[in-house]
Image (cartoon, rainbow, N blue to C red; front, side, top):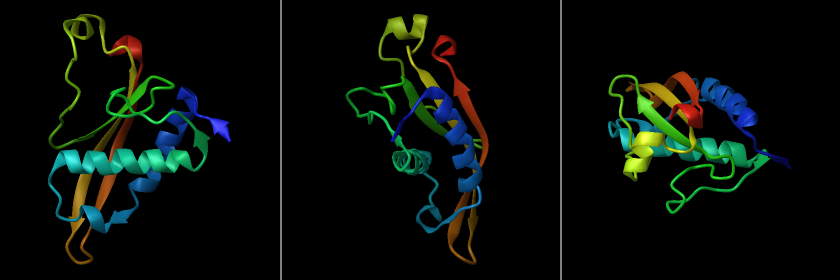
Length: 132
C-alpha cells in the first residue's frame, strides 16, 4: 500500500470534495451543529484515505489528524465560518501552529422530500505550516 504524502493528500482531498458534494447523506439531515458536520466529514475523509494509503492515525494526544505528515483537517461552513483550533501556547500564537492545514469549506442544504443533506464543498484549501 502507498504511503500518504502531502501531495497525495491534496490531490485526494480535491477528488473527495467533488464526490462528497454529490452525495445525499441522511445522517446529516436537519443537523445544524457545525462541530457534528465537521466530525462527520473528517471521519469520512480519513476512512476514504484508509482504503488506499498507509498513514499514522491522529489522536487527541497528538492534536492533529495526520501527524506523520504534520497536517490537520478543519471543516467549516461558508455561512458561519468557525475554527476549533485554539493556540496551545503563546509560542504557537507568535510562531505559528507548526503544522499544515487542509480546510474544507462547505455549504449544507437539506432536502425535506427525501430527508437527506448534501454538503457542497465549495473550497478545499491547503495551508502550509509556514503560513499557519
